[in-house]
Amino acid sequence: METLVSFGIEELERNGSINFNLETVLRESGVSRGSLYHHFGSRIGLISRCEAELLKKSLKADNEGVRLLINMGVSGKELFEILAMQVRTNGSPDALARRQRRIRTLALAMEDANLRAMLTEAQDKGSKFFAESLALAQEKGLIRPIVDLEALSYLVQSMFLGRILVDNTENSALSDGINEATITALEKLLNPQA
Image (cartoon, one colour):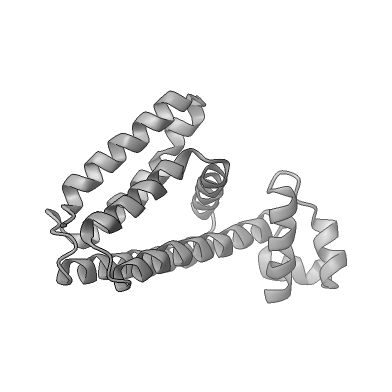
């Protein structure tokens, strides 16, 4: 399974899910077609598992980046400015590709109980880690949030995913506007300190 996922991720990153070439994955991995169908059920099953793994890595990297900033001893205002810069990159092709991948994976999970369980576990773990990072920032006096930290953690993630609606408009002015609205909302909710 791990071999197929590893080679599947390489293929997914090269060609995306639409042009994903199963024959290339099987040839390069040396894994039999029967093993693929036994473990994943189909080409779509392998793609969804690969996308789920990429989603888990992305969440982990984002969360670890926030924690690192908090532990570096930046002020609440500096931390918030770094987060605001990150929000402003939400219109970038990389951010769009990550959102699209996440949306596809979540959609596939509606039909696959195992994938849904895996994503739920990763999402819960990531949300808890982010909420713990916010709690650490609060303890250090960097922020004074006005809402529950777990709820805030899920809100931030839902804002990221919900932005796909703006992406679909392909309107760069709206994209910039939603970034600034997001920053304003987060500043009020986090209440960063000097």
